[in-house]
Amino acid sequence: MVNIIVTTNNTGELVGKLLEPADLISYQDGAVVSRTIVFQKSGTITLFAFDTGEGLSEHTAPFDAVVQVLEGEVEISISGEMFHLVQGQMIIMPANRPHALKALTRFKMMLTMIHA
Image (tube, rainbow, N blue to C red; front, side):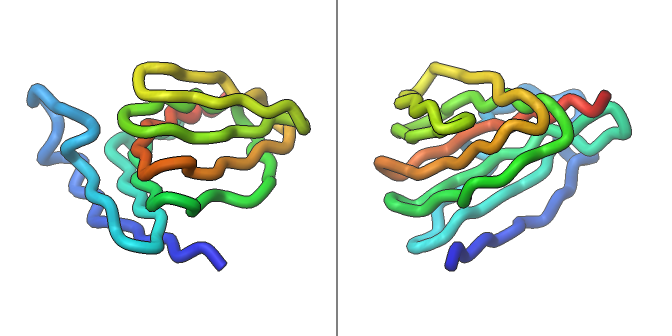
């Protein structure tokens, strides 16, 4: 069972400031931590910090989503195809296609979900 911790989403305090996304979220032992930094009708931007070995089981989403790796390494499957991503890389996960994530090391990502 994945332990997901949602941190406070004080998005207003971030507007109009220079940000380092990886610094806006912290790791927790044995957990996945998330923090939504933008929440709009048109889409969301959420930061995640995964401890080594943690992940998200296969699921689908109704919208395209972009994963940008901020730190570490992750294995992402999309419709059964495996991808190994490292810091600085990104991948677009298409809407309605099954995908899953597993942290190969502690890793942080920024997830941008476009609502169409």
